[in-house]
Amino acid sequence: MVKIDRIEHSVTIPEGVTASLSEDGVVSIQGPKGSLSRQFTNTNVDLFQEGSTLIVRADMPRRKTKALAGTWNAHLNNMVKGVTNGFTYNLKAVYSHFPMTLSVKGNVFVVNNYFGERVPRNADILEGVEVKVNNKVEVVVSGIDKENVGQTAANIERCVTVKNRDRRVFQDGIYLVGKE
Image (cartoon, rainbow, N blue to C red; front, side, top):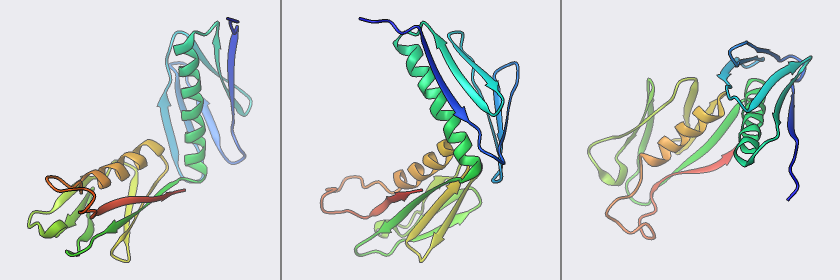
């Protein structure tokens, strides 16, 4: 088996976006949509900045170190994409008999009349995420942090899970339709 002596990933910072790397491993990226910061610390993986490029480097990597370097690269690319374009998840509410009503109250997403239930179902909306309800059945979750946007969409999907019924017959719920 051939050993690789160095893994190196480079993240290019586009025009209009600034990135700064502090000594304790905190990367801050500012762009037209906002700013994100995240801490990257590990003894086996190095992160440094050369001009308008962030470089993730691991010398003599083992399997876990290679995976961590790739993960850091993906996180940095997601941060750059978030502050330039943002992330949007589209969900759709589906029901057959009881029409559910969807609303946003502060940082809580509320589903009323799900399967005719009297108690509303709630889902948490994470920080920095905006949720809109369009046409009574379409839900748009958007923001600049991919993890928070995805987790909020998952919270909304999870709050309307069907329990004690056959999923093949009772298919009511809120489902992910598309991502941008």
